[in-house]
Image (cartoon, rainbow, N blue to C red; front, side, top):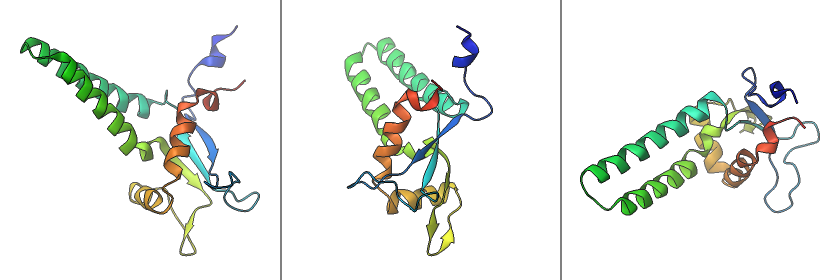
Length: 142
């Protein structure tokens, strides 16, 4: 097998996700104009950098507790909670862009500020983005 087929796609480290209605599971928007989020791959440089920073912080806290003779299990538990909170709070960082989203009749540009608008107006998107991100099959061709 040629491993180039499994290599990270540096040119386009995202995959498209069609947003679905939380009750029906139907795509939101008219056919051809569905709301699409472009989600970073977990292997995209941006995502790996964020996660590596969290991992380094967790390791640093654990080593600091060990050196001070403190109970590391408490530190590890706290660190795990922080990692979970980070994932929950930073799901918007997984969004690289979107298509077909308007607010008050105007196209909504993908900016950090508008991502907060998405979180407020479309809270159900969080679960869909996280599930899509966690399913590696979405980021590799078959």
